[in-house]
Length: 481
Image (cartoon, helix red, strand yellow):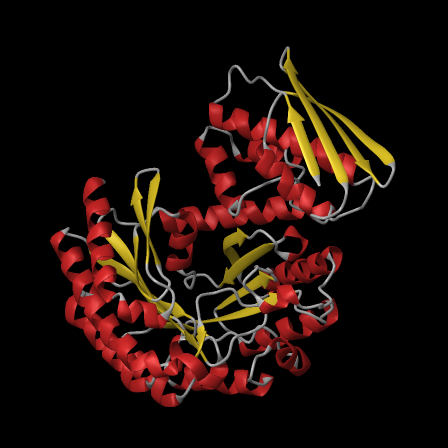
């Protein structure tokens, strides 16, 4: 695939959309010519493909001289990608309900336009007229932005969140690209990993105390943290209680994502340790799909784990589903969603299947749901969530997601996860511990990142470097004071 632009270049964004219409090895030649004169943009696109030429001549009125540099860049880029997509749709009618909006945070785009002085009606007009976002997706972005804003305004400038990464799973799912290792090979490192993690908590607590900060969110993720024993969960919680003021903790989440790792003993240890929110993630409630993607639990085990959590006293449960899993059509997905709704969790997150290079599924010939089918799944989700009193409160998109669609968390009022919003919107410093975590140090509009090692053995062997990374994070936090 060849892409040539002149007059204005947005090679990254144009290639993103080009790869929605053409495979990388297809012989498509894309030529884009951009002009701006007398407050009018003109983008002429020609695509040569399969012996034919396809054209689009796009015009758009815009006062660039009296607009911010940021808005100017966004409008120019949107016009280039729109012109291309209009031409490409004459070749293949690919469904793009988010139009030509790039980036992983559409709701953030909505809020930023409001912060630039546009009112609600004008922002909606920009979404539709400039980016060609569908009415449904525009409304979704608006609703997420409103819920995000309410929670973001509550962030204390002296607060930080903690992320604790547990990089172990009972098995590795074929679609997975998260930081995790199969305990059948890495389980022998688990005990020493926990010992090092406790020392990293000690070091982190010293830094937070020295900087005069406090922790208001703790999230133990992975991997699958409930691959740990009840005793290890208890020890980690006890170490956290030793250093941090839990009267200031808004939310303490433990990912218990795999139902086959959940036991009453582990849940009891978590609750006694202050955990007030957990995730139980079926991904699908169809047994044939679970087997196909490498999950070792059954739909009944999901229901049993949910009951165990309720019996343990957990009042805030999140459940994840994936739309577009191999072999699933909209009917199968709707069944899964309705089954989860019948359990009545406070929070339901629906992900669009995203194929990363690291995932086994990317190297297999599996039939993935077509974009239109995917969108039917998400439209049904949105309808059912509103019917059951759950509102969208955080959203992100990922490159390579099926249908270029979104991942959305829906929750009942009073149960929206502040940590999820913080990590998406990057308005609060998040200090990462354990395997594979990425600390995000927020200094005004600038974000600095410090990465922990992913592999458990590397984390153990190079633990002295982990401690140095904590000092590096502390220096970045002090620089922003």
